Length: 412
Image 1 (cartoon, rainbow, N blue to C red):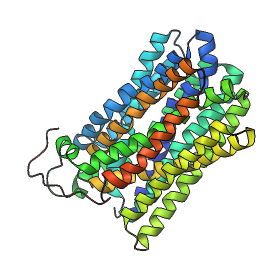
Image 2: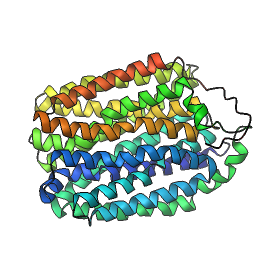
Image 3: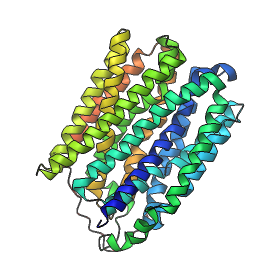
Image 4: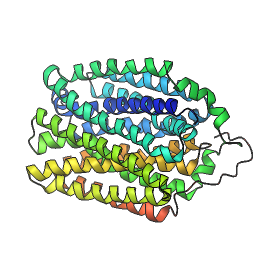
């Protein structure tokens, strides 16, 4: 990409979109303690609502990846963005479990465009030795979204109620469309066909046949299981099990996600610095993901077993480890796929990875109802984190660009 400033503005706009993406998807988790009481919902029902988002979000990643390769990425993101904002606003008017369930499904459909489309644009327009910072920007948005949603959302919840939380944040989110439709995305989308590599784009079938794609999907699933476990159930756990007030929950939860942003910022800088200095992307990315997975497992033990001080410290530390993973996961997929296949690859990787969002919250709710505690739920999350280490060290032999052999245009 010759226009570095334009590419930088693109990265920041995409980071803002991801920020809003995670604010809107996390609102239900923030509102859960109050909403469950008002609408008489069980922990199992809350778990189903939290996971329902991922029923459509995960599957629709495949369609979003296809759309990213076939149509202007700018328009695909804008359409999905508008859809999820209106679903968020409508949630503020819901009164039954079924209506909440349907709106969570629509929200997942809209939000599914974010990562396949953003990865496609970064792979086409940002060089490998600057991609760490760009993915770091997006990871910061990913982190600050839950931080903002937990902190500000918790305050709105305490003062005005859960309906005001959804309506106000959903309406404000729509403002992002103004700079997006008027900004650098239009120029970059127009240039994309000229910048793309020669030859046909690999199909989904070709991608699925790659061992690296399967490994990336498994690794993404394991990283997501812990992340969505914390994202979906942290407010409920802190308030109902550890006795936190809504204000204290909002404060420590917000700080944990702020540490996620700090971890993402540091990781993006460190990755680019090491690669620029001559270190292989394979070693840099793999080591970062291993540290993240093991660190997350250790920190979750502290959240489960620690007293008040250790609990708070462990929450901040696990937030930092999330920053390592969120910066690296998509950068790995972009490197493996290359510009020709980044949209479809991240669509597949994200679809597999976000199955954790379907299974995790629902399983957690079931385990809590059956056992009366969070111990088994924490144990399962830790086990998946350790499985992630095997995905990045055994299933994927080397993190390097795949050599595609497509000779004809792909249909799927």
